[in-house]
Length: 395
Ligand SMILES: Cc1cc2nc3c(=O)[nH]c(=O)nc-3n(C[C@H](O)[C@H](O)[C@H](O)COP(=O)(O)O)c2cc1C
Image: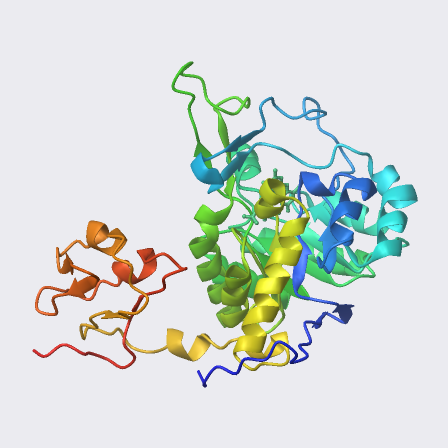
């Protein structure tokens, strides 16, 4: 990448076009309980969140699913993940058609999330929403804990294609297929697009996962079996690779979802080819303000790198993902002025290659070039970096 250009005044254009819908920026609130009603969505529409997705709407509430298990949310240590065993919107579709969607759409673009489990239900919901002021429809094929309980539809390319075809016939709005992690993700995404999907969102929660309370030996979640879908920062690298795979497989816009909690996370998603990103768990933990924090990070990066549009970032990582494996050892370089020998790098070095004097000193002959020390150096020091090029070690 070119040299950094820093200007606090440089105007940057964050707007994106998603299937003909103009958004003021690339950030959206993902589907979930924060989109349970027009009132809860309003909190996010006051921020730089450019579009909101409803919690998945239901025409049919199955017996026993009128309420959620209790507890239905469980947070990991340091809030690096969240498990949930929630299911669709508790409010009737009628509420959304009469009140929720008109109210929310008057404030900004709204995406209606609907379930992709049953073809008939999906078609019926699209028809019912045909007169509603929605920007797009997002078909949820990918809830990981519902998949555990009722069978995974996100792996079933034929099912996904049939449902997308039916939704396209019934819907006036462009259709997003929301897929989840799957060993056949790229093939399913390609089939969804062939069936008419206007965009792909990936991923939903991943798993399911399980957590146990050590004092009671009970599962943390109240659902039989204790399992729940996992979301939050811990799933980010999986979500990023899912987005990369889908971008490679389709030509329609891709919406990156999963573990995004900072400007850098959003930038990484866009660099592998995402057009927009959705944020959910970070909004649960940090509230609506997280959208302005992510937007500021994104804007700051664009200015620092001299880009004027968010589109300039799209796909920047793609050529590098095609480069061959590098087996030449790159020994990290210490910026002596910034190193305040805290010892973080020395503690994690698996090769015991770092001496701590008045600063970190890396012994090139012992270093295996693993790169871990660079990532654990506190960002406010930022004293370690990997050299450009292939190798800076003799032999
Ligand atoms: C409590 C909770 C409820 C969710 N409900 C839905 C839902 O109704 N429909 C849907 O498509 N995704 C749902 N999701 C998945 C999120 O939209 C998102 O895809 C996933 O959590 C990964 O993104 P994140 O790590 O930013 O949360 C839910 C996630 C959580 C944590």
